[in-house]
Image 1 (spheres, rainbow, N blue to C red):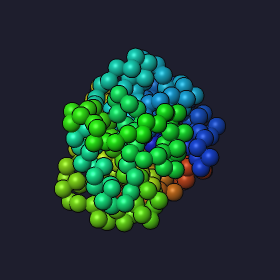
Image 2 (spheres, helix red, strand yellow):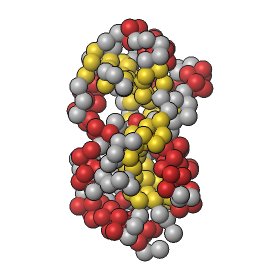
Image 3 (cartoon, rainbow, N blue to C red):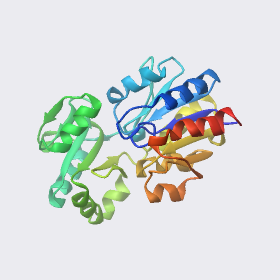
Image 4 (cartoon, rainbow, N blue to C red):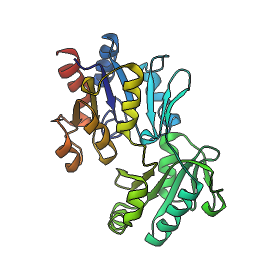
Length: 269
């Protein structure tokens, strides 16, 4: 019997209008009433998830949230960090230099300055609006080498970013966890940070086995948790690569795929 379900937000729990449908809300409520643990697992900071957590009632002392694609896992009620793997200013500067060479923008999340960018661009506003964050424009070379950075992102129009990905040096792929969370976002994380490790940290904290975990997602940054979970589910709208690694493919995020799977796998056996 599955005891925990980890849900990606964009493209999975949220529909195309960035809304959690009434059907998904009801299914999550039923799962919680049945004693199941529901975890939101996103690339967003917790500030960009609080409204969703409160809407779903995932805000108690036994509730946890996975932020920044697994770089940080927190207890929702207390704010206590149960798992964290971040990078530093030296890494951010290295990635920013390469981003400039590849002709793409760069964002980062600093524990001191919040959302930072070397140059304000259209995607900066998207990131700030989604997460309700202020933007700090700064030269990354001014960061101290040990400045705590949660994650760094290369950002560009999809065809430009695709070209940058094709020309990404092997050493960067080896030094960081590199995942594409959206057609215009390529994320660089601590090599020990990903959604799979984050979900595993929550499961271990709660005494739940991987075989008792469901994970649902639609993109490359969900792959680690889909592989970790006893049941990895891809949305019908998922990337083809995501579907290939999934154990099960459900209907799309606009057809309440989360609700369908909760009822199928958590509430009806």
